[in-house]
Image (cartoon, rainbow over all chains, first blue to last red; front, side):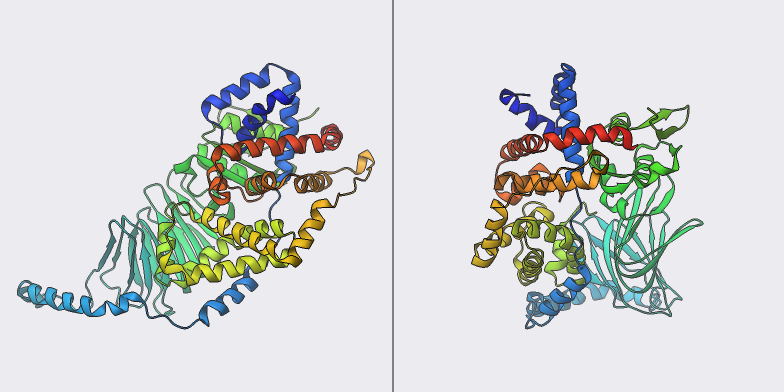
Length: 329
Length: 190
């Protein structure tokens, strides 16, 4: 390649970065196909690419968090703005009660104290609220959360969730906190916990920040501890615990798959989920290979091609499966 | 994992320390990796990032994000690190590293392994011009998109494209010898 071809380096860099548009990919493919030396050059760049993606050195996040937490909690307390607004709210509430009383009164006789279903909904903005047990919730817009009828005095504290929310669950070992999602996944909070939950028609995702949770779908069950995440995918029917899944948690929406020093075994697990395919390992040793790369809007064939080229392995198709095996020279 | 980072930012804005901790744990390591790389000093990088998070918490109520939270935090880390470089002591260490050439040691073919290529590549990264290096690091080590890199460094996406191409080209030239040997070896490693 000579100086005049600088444009092509930009292009190949975009290709490697997953930033190339369909036209650019085509342009690159045509250009590469014209000369085998160009293909060799691309292979060399790919190697640089692959080996420069080393993960950050280890830093002690726990220790650092202790430092930062000490600093932010020693700051003088600022009176939150919303507290100053309390009078306004109080006045509004009084007014609302005054107006509402005539309508409420006829129903009071029927209401069974403590057995009411409470619905929290965030429509256009995110909302923060507190459940009757003191647990704090933050709901994303478009999220609805409903407490069970016996939330206050039942054996368990049950809520139903549709959407995305944070839970800061108040500890009560006697009465476990259980979140049920639209995908019939049930999340049981074990101990004081702060959890993140995203749920839609296809996917339920859970990330645990503190405490422990048990996630159950049908007869499957996993336990998640801080830093871990898990997901249930309705399309594949799989309930999985995986740090790598969180990196690709919204792949179904973005069509973007990101792997960072990920074991090939995990890569395949994610590809199987994403492409609804069945890739198997014929050689055990290659499961442990570590792969780094990003794919955006790529058909499975292209992804496999990159993996084949990176590790010199072959993907062999049979009727219902794809077998990964070492490439015998 | 969040499609809507507004949720996180909003929760932090409402004094939710758990949401703050979540963001901290999510971004602490990559931010330290980036800041330490810029400062060429591990401890200084951690210091910068911890201060950044303390300030982030202090300013939580007036926080207005236009782009992604990740780009916002990287931009903050970038600016903080560049400020720190202005301090004389750190500046000296930085300058020293700039002129310091990594000695290239001849290696017998059979001992050349992926680890060594990785090291050579790291050395080649350090030899890149400043903007090139920042773009390359943000892309490869921290996996930011072109758009996010443009946001962090305050440059156009077009410039990111050019700098990326330039970085690859320079590294390719720098590593010519190593790569040829390596590609040759690679055929026999597997």
